[in-house]
Image (cartoon, rainbow, N blue to C red; front, side, top):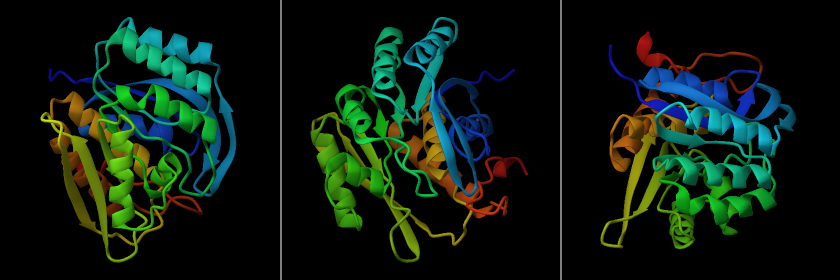
Length: 269
């Protein structure tokens, strides 16, 4: 049988199934990994919005991380919503303890519906404890603005934010341009090369006009983590992840009364 890399998702659950842990597990399976989880929060949400966020204790999170880390050979980690400062510290300690070195951090701060999921003290803690431990940071434009304190309204702002995040110790950052105006969408990948220079690359795709965009950030970050676990280098993993999310968005169908999910198993049809 084909061996599948173990991909750990550290994130909140989504009762509607379109984002968070549920989207991560679907994505990891669709791309070719074996998904396991450490749940940081239970959320009550659907395609219309978030009704409630209920964080688990740092101790409950620690025990989940240890249960996975003590038993499974984790090839890559995806980190999503971390609603408390204590959880950020717990995750940082686990990364160090188990030597997880392929880590994608999606700094989930605002849901597609506009609901705020993470407060500023947590964002500050992520900057101090997780930025330097992660292979890739994947903020959208609003999250990049919140993390840097800079305006991010166009591609110039995205690039300036990426440079600022590298200066804060991030090894690589993919600033996502899904909210750019126009008929194309561009994401900017900035990373520190082996010689210390800054390497950058733009990933552009035609914009798909659809309301079914729930969980796109979770899905993309999980896909990239899975490709890293499969042995892709960073740029190739981002390229493959971008291609996957584009297919999943284009194939999405209406579900619910709000922002429906993407079609995670598009390649299985």
